[in-house]
Image 1: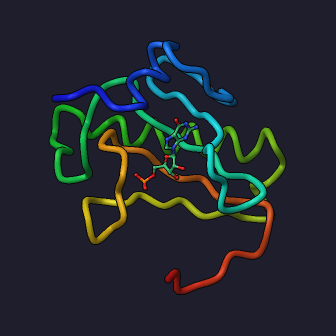
Image 2: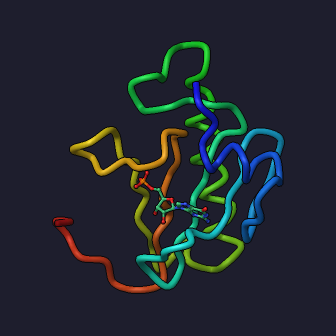
Length: 114
Ligand code: 5GP
């Protein structure tokens, strides 16, 4: 698999505004934010799309959710609320093929999305 821009962020070959890190997950600000808070949470292993989740790597999803919870609490957006989005492939609007959770917060978000 070709490395993605997120592999280069993980290896610190290109800079990112990192706001969260643990043994499994990295969280950094989206370069093109869609809300006052827009952070991408990615696993520290390459999983290209949601379709590539299997028994052996599914625990990364739990770790991503825990990372989101910790970060939301840390920035005091847990009670206000937020949205988590995972895009898959073309119709989902996925552009970087290393799974990620978009964490969006800091304003009233509209539903349904476009
Ligand atoms: P997707 O469309 O795949 O769900 O989301 C990819 C996200 O990655 C987009 O929101 C885009 O703004 C963000 N992104 C793309 N390249 C970079 C980059 O080099 N640095 C950061 N911080 N975000 C990026």
